[in-house]
Structure formats: C-alpha cells, structure tokens
Length: 435
Ligand code: GLU
Ligand code: MG
Image (cartoon, rainbow, N blue to C red; front, side, top):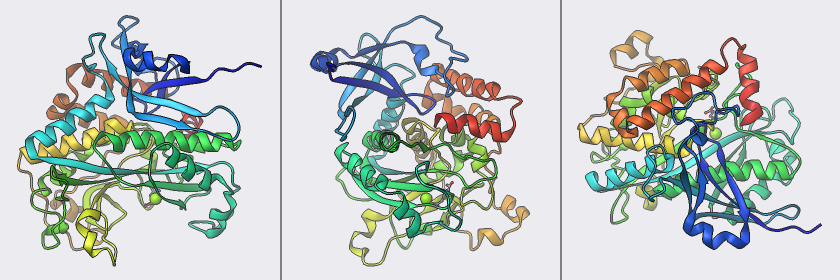
C-alpha cells in the first residue's frame, strides 16, 4: 500500500484537548506561511464531542497558524511518526483571534514584562494512570510498580526528548497504576507548549504500546486524583532569578511577593480555569494531597500554593531553583489558559500592591474558625461555584476580553448541564473515557 506522510496542525482548546487538521507533508512550507482554516465554534467542541453551546454559530473563518518553534517530530518503531505543530488562532488578516488560548497567555507574559520587568519560568508536572500495568496492593511509589510498567517510562522519556521537551523525572505515584512525569522549566509560552506536548507524548506512547494513559482528574469519586502541578518562578529581564529571599516571609523576595499574593487572592476564581471540569472537584477533596483550602504553605503538599524546597548541595543554585507550586490544576485545563490565568492574577497583585498574609505556624492545627479569621477560604466545592466566582471577578473579564469571557463561561456551564442527573461515578467514567 502506498503511504504518504501527513503533518497535523492543532490548537489546545477550551477543554484542554488538542484538535486540528492534517495535510500532506509535501505542502508543509506553504502551510507554515498560510496556516490551516478553522471556524470559531471549533473551539467550543465540548469535552464529550458535540458542540453543546456556541456564540459563534456556523459562521466565520479563522486560521490556525502553526508556530515553527512548537513543532514535534518523533519517529516510532512501528506506525507513523508523531509530526505536528501547535498553532495560534488568528483572524484572516493575521491579527490574534480574541478567543485564542495561546494569545491569552502571550498577552499576560507581555504585560508582566512591560509593567514589572519580569519573565516567567515554569514547569508542569503531569500525573496520570497507565492502563498497561495491573494494580497490586501497596505498590504506591514502589520500585515494583516502576519495574512493571516495562518500557513505557523509558519510551516516554525518549519521546519527550525527541519532541524537544527536556524530561526531569518519571515516578510511580500514589494511586493504583498511577505515574507522574516531570519536565525541566521553560521560559514564557514554551512552558505551556511543553505541557501540551508532554500530555500528547504520554497518550501517544501508551497507545503505541497497546494501552491507554488516563489523565482525568479522578477515576472514582472517592479515589486519589491526578493533578497537573504548575511550578513557577519569576526572573528579571537580564536572566537573573528574582523570586527568592531567604530572609523574607515564605522565602519569597519582596519584588515577587505581590505576584504570589495576587495568585492567592484570585485562587477561588482561578479554579474555574485551572480545575475546569465537574470531575475536578472530586479530586479537590481532603486527605488526598490535593488542595482544599486556598492558602500558601512552605513545603506543604496540602496547600493550594506550595513554596517548593531548595535541596541540599544546591545552595549555589538556590535562587535559580526556588519556585512556587500551583496545585489546583488538572489535565482538563488548557495549559495556556491555566498559566495565563496565574500570570494575569499575579500581575493584578503587582498592580494592586497586594501583600502576602503572615506565615502561619501550623495550618493543620488551626480550627476552621481560626482559618476563617486568618482570611483563609475553602476552594470552590464545584465547577458551578468556581464559575460564579470567576464571573464575579471584574478583572478576569479584562484578562479574557468580553467576547472570550462570555464564551468561556457559556462553554463550561454547558459542560455542567450535559452531566446533569448523572451519578458521580458515571461522571468520572465520562471524563476517563476522554482524558
Ligand atoms: N495526586 C495528588 C493530586 O491530586 C498529588 C500528589 C503529589 O503531591 O504528588 O494533586
Ligand atoms: Mg505527584
């Protein structure tokens, strides 16, 4: 059978899924200049497939313009290579489309650099369940589980590196058959591209081995979830790390603490963007190392924002290594929207001169009343609640722009409506089938 090489161009949409179109590789040069057509409602494809609600109807043409820096070409022993580009969504005249997720992040990065002279370095950690390994009791973080995944881990690390993403670690995680892959931090937009590519490589390698990777927030309503933890630090324009001051509260430099305070302040609204599915809220439950309270903690895996440790022997690089981990995210979030929202919120903190709360001696020893007195809120308990918080956040409307803000809220509310009446376990199954 004669075969001809194809290239795919795609965008990561509001459901956090990559969708797009393929074309013969011989036309690549022209496509890199002209892009590939799409329509507005394409970005309103629900996680479950059909378009449930859209402000764009059937009209309008857009261009997916492939970014040459976001190219993936990974050969595999059997089957076609992975060859795709991530793209920006543009109007026909080449201006960014108002609802382009990648541009949402780009606008945040540009504003942060222009107003505060700061650049973001970040890395997304991805947890997931691998179907190609049987569950054995007690295999949590176990060498046994690490061994029994066979060549999945090494194939994934190889695929990531070939895809231009620098791998950092691969580990067996807490839940049955759960693993995690982490990658090195990248600058600006590239970190979100890396996150999208990383998820696709996880799925691709699992599928090529005849299995599946399940990135859904939880597989059972009372199970341990899979998070996407986003580590970030701020650097000045000359490439010097700016986030750490060991003598300051939380070890966070005064120049950067208003940014972190902004993220903390907006956390309940940000949840609608970073934990944006109905199932996300089955993950955000007590006693699962997933956050429930909107607080900042030093080296506390129960915190929504965790000041990550600096490891011994790394003092010389401590300033560069220092980072804050945002834990209220999962794989139903689009990485461009998630990172963009964190940066928009942080910049709001800088603009407003927001201050971090005093360091708490022992959050877990505090009563709920003491937490309330310290101004610590619970994170939203459902997507509906998170969306209401987002809608009530006036500055968030400006981060998105009016058209995108309305479209996003409509999109996510239609996802809630589509699941109405289903049992929590059925809801988990619906997401597991897709993510
Ligand atoms: N699986 C946990 C979550 O849902 C996190 C475990 C960890 O700290 O690595 O976020
Ligand atoms: Mg983990």
